[in-house]
Image 1 (cartoon, rainbow, N blue to C red):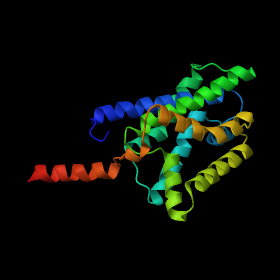
Image 2 (tube, one colour):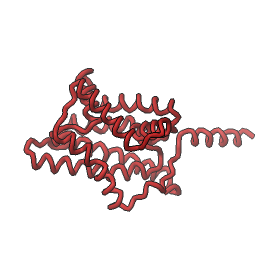
Image 3 (cartoon, helix red, strand yellow):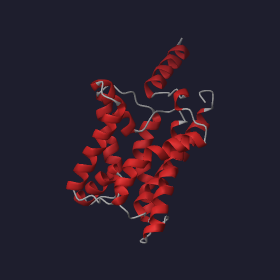
Image 4 (tube, rainbow, N blue to C red):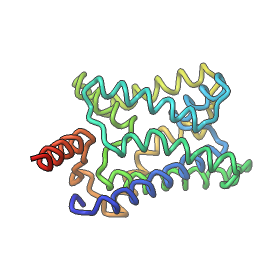
Length: 222
């Protein structure tokens, strides 16, 4: 994958980010309760009168800053993930491009489908090798700093996001429980189905591009 052209990587990245947004909106429009981070986004949306997408962007921006000061490296994929997932969510939701279901069975199917789409989108955007998303970056940074397990750190972060979001007016439901317990399995299933080995991924970070450009300009000036 590392030998792929930059154009291919960016196309794959943006396809993955758009697909991820589709999966998120499917779980939201299933109307069975929001995923932990979306409970937080909904709480911010309700409190400050902004859209879900704008809340996602704001949270992503804050997380990128925190992760950076904790020593986590940032890729172009991290920055674009921070902005464009929220942007795509707003496009999909404000234009009603994905239906909303009220009956339990169609809603459940929609939510399960959304989790599978998120799994496939994760393969697409991580496979671009341009850096992990802000929330994954924060999880990695805290894991390194605390020497706690990934599972403990991830659960702690999501419980905090869920609790704060609920206090701010976010929506909980049976879907919140299902997604909290099952999203990892759907992502893992997508990885296996698409034969994606995350251990073979080698991300390229922004600082590497800055160093490369400095060397390039220094060479051209001689």
